[in-house]
Length: 216
Image 1 (cartoon, rainbow, N blue to C red):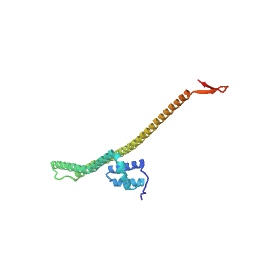
Image 2 (cartoon, one colour):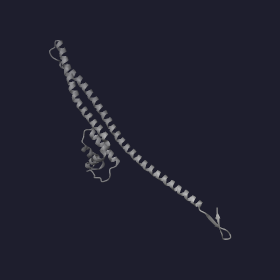
Image 3 (tube, rainbow, N blue to C red):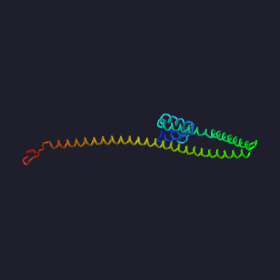
Image 4 (cartoon, helix red, strand yellow):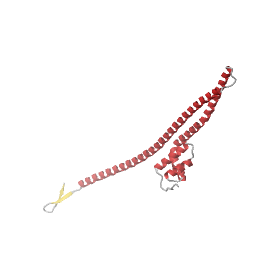
């Protein structure tokens, strides 16, 4: 059972929410399934994850969402290719069988030999299997690149947030430094004025006879 947390969302929680949700979008799954997976991972309810995504996190990943949807469309297209390729191969097999049958007629034979049929079927079976292996390799490479791209975009978002925080901290420190310099400057001016006032004051001392004498 998923524990219900009441504490605030951390930057790491937001990154986990974004990464898993983008993966589900890319793979053609639903956001509800993504929120449930996130909830299980960070100990929150799926409703809380969905609210956080829609209210705060989503707007920071609009570009990544568009890319994930595009990748989902590409995957859907690739999944449809084997059936189309199979129909194409079947057409080629039939065409070659007809060609073989025509050559058999030209040699005076009335039927297409079973050996010829088996030969063509084996030939095109091998070609079809090889094409299938190459397609699977391409799909695997595509998934790896898509995952790598998503990770890089999430990392870029995290670094951008850190840079923004660092810039904010720098502005605060810089403002404090300027304020300190102004305070020190005013204190120095005040001390200088006090020294001038002391120097301008008239000074007296008492002589041996008890009379006050002005000191220049």
